[in-house]
Image 1: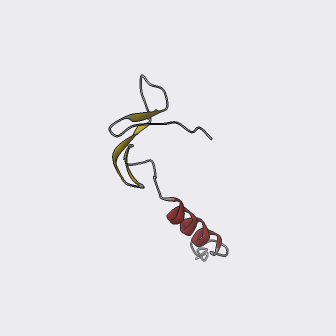
Image 2: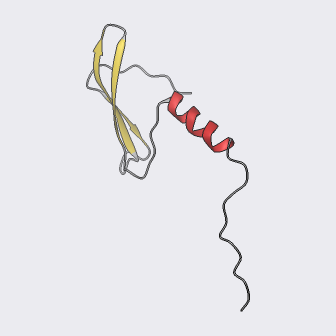
Image 3: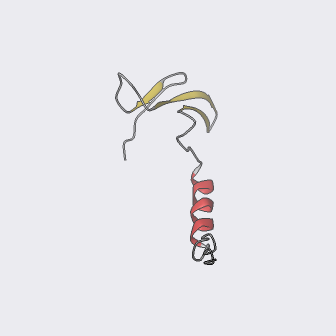
Length: 74
């Protein structure tokens, strides 16, 4: 894990700096709360940890998979 210090308005570049995947900016700091702004392409999912855990739990509760019914020979 990389831990860095950033001030309000400063950014972290994710990926190749010449063509980054996205950026994370410290949007605001108020007391003990930090607001982060994420700029990533729409096809990249970005979730809070608790939401990501719920998504994983929902996927693991599905048993088997749905397949189309086999066609009958005519």
